[in-house]
Length: 197
Image 1 (cartoon, rainbow, N blue to C red):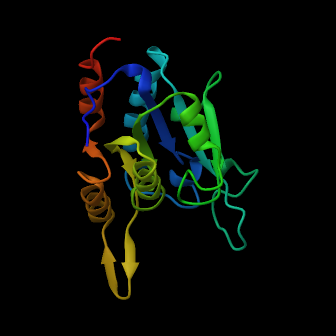
Image 2: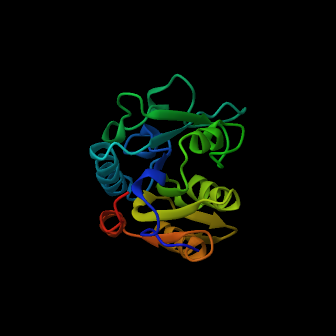
């Protein structure tokens, strides 16, 4: 797998997945660490904005029967204020964990000639994981911002897996095969070292 400092800024795109109100305090599905993850995602967003690099906001809208959060036309489904889209930044709406499934994301990335993706968002074990794996299958190099993602505790039978363990396990599984996992500041440092076009 190629590293971030091969190639040029032009081929980079930022994908922010499901950083929406329901994942924060008083939301319908509050995650652990969502505030700090959003702060770091916002730093990546600002980095891309100041360099006029392509940005893609992914917004989940739950339309299936029995859905309890991200319901269409609710405040909880709105993108969080910390990473609110501005100008002509793309918003891709989805209904499945994989951001590519039944959306125009792949076509938009191809149209922008993007080859490498910086990925951040929520939940680490669900939509971030599904999207990164799909992106890899489509041939994209992915860098996943470990401190700009958040998740929640999970339970299987009588066993509870703490949110931090869920987060670490899923990032560890992605790292090396499906992408490269780094803190957001290291990703920005690597991008700054990229050769100019």
